[in-house]
Each structure stands twice: as structure tokens, then as C-alpha cells.
Image 1 (cartoon, rainbow, N blue to C red):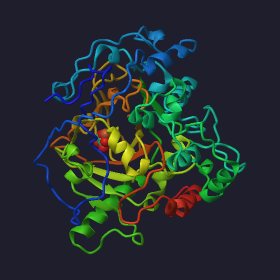
Image 2: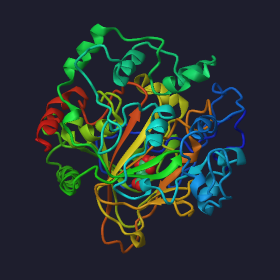
Image 3: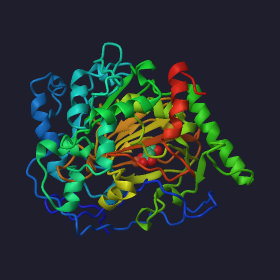
Length: 482
Ligand SMILES: O=C(O)CCC(=O)C(=O)O
Ligand SMILES: [Fe+2]
């Protein structure tokens, strides 16, 4: 069965190989299960209530025009520039069966990264253009707010007057509207100029008052500005943007995340403890359970996932929020670690949620950013790369393969920036390549998804964002976890 039809852009009768990675509270108290047999189960999702309006232009294409005034990284080397068609691509056969090739119009919006720019090398500084794109397309106006030679964007918390993204999100979560997704689901219309604001929960129609701003700021309890800035960016793809941040985690941070996950596995296997807010033990989920409450999203991955208390992973919460320039952590889903043993993988999927899932879960909305941190190194012969089927690497190779590099983070945006009025960017179709049978290391990643608005965690039991403030504060002060 054809699962996704990019050809039907206009009447977007979506058939999604539905969200494959949405977390869920496990339905069974037995957290360890090895049910890999039903892979890959393909289930069509058809939303009759959701029919985006026709659209003639592509968001990224229209955004592209403004960048022509600036230094266009594509023009210098004769590669496809904004608005031009990249070379024809032949995606891997396996993915084409499930997800047909992108339609020509959509392919035109793929803008590969330059091969000769400084951003290609690890250690490069993110260019002004990239900051602009992060702000204009993805709504991140304080991205990384620093860096040697980069644009300094401080996250101020003292005035009480500044309108922060999370504060706006909090407003939206308690009744603010005007978001693209609200609009799509309600069958209304949305002004193109408001689309990005809505997408990222930053509707200006309901501004938050000074009083609430002050309260929010003073409750924060940690200062992200104390962290030294990230400096090692690689722009792996320009549009849609895929970034690597090579100085995200230290090797010891990587090791600690693996260790706490493994410890928990041992304890749960020997039935000596289960996760509680006191022991902060992460919760280990079985394979098929990692992918959602609903039957649409079963068993696409053969890896194992742990859900962590926010409080138990302050490094991740602090660094992720600092990278994206967020005031608070309330929009992050449950932090996760994932282990892929030899031969394990995660098949082609989109991280964006189906519209109904996005509107459930306490109105948290769509997944707007995926951040994953590689906790182990895997050389190319060992497999385990994150692969983007329709994006090209800097050398023109397809698919774009991101090799796991210990401590390096990968950031991309599953929903904004694609086809206007569609809640996900189908160009970000990706997978976790199988780890080779004889690979030296297992592949481990830590992972976070950012939602449009405040998210209510469901696991481990009693998990909540606010409890992490103390641990995050301690980490910000000392640069080390407590
Ligand atoms: O493991 C990877 O490289 C990708 C993981 C992923 O795409 C996901 O968990 O959604
Ligand atoms: Fe994914």
C-alpha cells in the first residue's frame, strides 16, 4: 500500500506512515519487551476532517527570495541555488516503496549546503544567513544566543517586559490561538504572515502581560547564559535545515547517559526498583512500546528506549534549551535515550505528528524540532547513520548520511518549512540505519522533541519540568551535573 502521497499536495488527503516516535505511557507495567516481529507494520492514516487549503507557493521558496540579496552559498560553486532545481535524485528503493519520491515541486525546495563554506567544517561559526533562516523559517530568534564571532543573543530574564517564546507558548497553551495547526484543524483561514508565529506558538494576537512575564522569569531558577557557547556547527543541509553541533556533550556526559540507562535496565530486569521521583531512575520501554499509544505507529524501530526524568538529565535540558534559545523547558517532551544493538534500526519515518496527535496531549501541538545527541562513535563501516532520504550531502551524495559522532548533536525541524499549510515537512523523511552485525560499538543517542506549546509529560511516573530547576541551576553554575 502507498503510505504517503506527496503528489496530492493540493488536496492533501494525507496518508501518513504515521508518527513513529511519539512517546507514550506504556500500557503494561512490564517495561521490558522484545516484540519485534510485526515490523514493519504499515497503517494508513486518513484524516477526513483535515484538508489544507490549496497553495501555490512553497514557504521555503518564498523565503528564499529574500536571501538572494545576501551571499548565496549556492551561487559561488554553481550548485543549485534557492529556487533552482537540485539534481534528480534516486532515493533508496526500500524507502520508495513506503514513501514515494517527492513530487518535482517539492524537490525544488531542497537546497543543499555548499561544499566549500566554513560551515561545512566542524568548528565553523554559524553564518548570519543561517541565523536569519533559523529565525524566519523555524521561529528561533535566539538560537544559541552566542558563540565566538557569532551573533550574540542574550536571553534576558530580569526586565519582566520581554516577550519570551516560552511565555508566549504558555499563553497559547491556556487558550491562545491563531496557530497554523489550530487553523487547519478548525477549517479556518490563517494569514500567511502569521503562519510561522503560529507554528511556533508565538502568536502575537495574545500578548502576555508584564506581570506574568516577571513571574515566569523569577521562577526560572537557572541562568542559561552562564554556559559557554557552542562553537562547532556543521550545516549539513540548508533548506530544510539540518545542523550538527559537535561540541554539544562532553565524552563523560555521553558516558553518564549510557550508564544511567544501563543501570536502570539491570535494576528493572532483576525487579529491584522501578522509576520514582525519588530515585530518578529512567524508565525503560520495550521496543514496540516506544512508538506511541496507538496502533498506527507500531514496531518500526527495533531499538530500545528509556524515558528520563527531566531532573535526571539536567545537561541535556540546559544545553538543548540554550542551543535553541528557549527561556524554559516546558515545551520539551520527555528526554529519551535510545540504544541500537547490532542489526537494530529505525525505518523511514517523519518525526512530525499526525494532526490529531498534535492536538491531543494537552494541546502541546506539533513537534517543531528534533534534537538528538550521539553518545557513541560509529565509523561508516559500522552503519548506524541517521539518513535523510531526500536530502543530499555536501558532496552531492544522496541520501544525506550523518555518522554518529560521540558528543555531537543533530538538529532538524520536522514540521515547519515545508509545504505551506501542511503540518510536517515531508522533506525530512529519515531513518536510523541498521547497526552492522560486526560493529564495534552499540549506537546510543539521547533525544528530545520540542513542541509548539507547553507539553505535559506522561512518563516516568510523576515526571514534570519544574522539578528540574534545581538540577539545571546547579549545572549552569558549575558546568557539571549535581
Ligand atoms: O537513530 C537515529 O539515527 C534516528 C532516530 C530517529 O529518527 C527517531 O528516534 O525519531
Ligand atoms: Fe526520527
